[in-house]
Length: 368
Ligand SMILES: NC(=O)c1ccc[n+]([C@@H]2O[C@H](COP(=O)([O-])OP(=O)(O)OC[C@H]3O[C@@H](n4cnc5c(N)ncnc54)[C@H](O)[C@@H]3O)[C@@H](O)[C@H]2O)c1
Image 1 (spheres, rainbow, N blue to C red):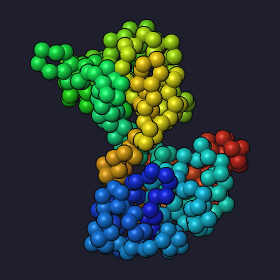
Image 2 (image 1 turned 90 degrees about the vertical axis):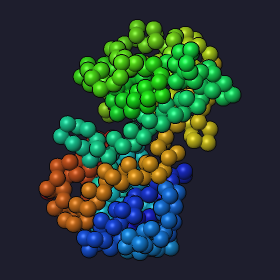
Image 3 (image 1 turned 120 degrees about the horizontal axis):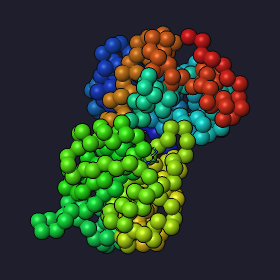
């Protein structure tokens, strides 16, 4: 198969859909890979590394879309890409169709086969192509939180790990899912005292089993949240109710209960946030302050660490890229129920029920 990897053109997107290692695996199996010049540069991969792995470099995005049978990228196509996508071309990337009607309509019009990273789903309903980004964001939340606890950026002036003779900082983690566990692990590693709350006893039992004794678990409810916000220095929001907006666990009035300089990192801001006062921010301007509480609400945290994020993402996408390239999408999906869940649009038909419901577009069951 001929695979094309364009440079991401969405604002501030520095990741790339394939690493030189991925190119090597594809070309070894007889596939041909075209990658746009400098597509990997912001993730730390230069053109020569791709050439050495067997790729061909093309100068323009138009050439990449024109030649490829399958496009492998990271973010959803944006308007200038809509008309480059061809009938029967496979496009394997994050789409998030439900949040964009223009994108959905454009992909229907294109006649392409759209396979969305975010709906590739395991039997236990976990989303293997989203997990690595939650891992990155969870770990990063402590790094960023520790930084904004510093006094010159209006934090409490607390060093998370403490020093001999001074107690460590206290971190409250809301949600013991992927983000929450990675955050707790990093905070514990720094020596902070960590309290982690969830409504799932199964998650709390797991955390209790694997974490050191200075990570304590409690059931998530308003009483416990109100109790802990008074004494914790850094609060991480990592809750998720699949398919719904995040619940507002911290309300505006609660900010008054916190000590000045408390930092909130609301990782769940991409689903509306679990703090009433959260609103999405960017890496250029990541924080704002309300009632002396510092809010960090960057909606695409992994974008700040494109090397790690690209490698983490392509580690999990490559096995599917290989299946799609080796077998073609129909056979690959017929043989793999997890990948099949990723198919959203085929030749102008919406084959993913939730998308048809959101935009009131007829649903066509996938016939493979
Ligand atoms: N900002 C970013 O850059 C970024 C990056 C990756 C993920 N995210 C977001 O982070 C959030 C968490 O993702 P995840 O992968 O950890 O999800 P997850 O499903 O693994 O974990 C969510 C956890 O929240 C718990 N939960 C639900 N309601 C709760 C409540 N009332 N109190 C406490 N816990 C509750 C669930 O039981 C679950 O354990 C999502 O909204 C995700 O989109 C943001």
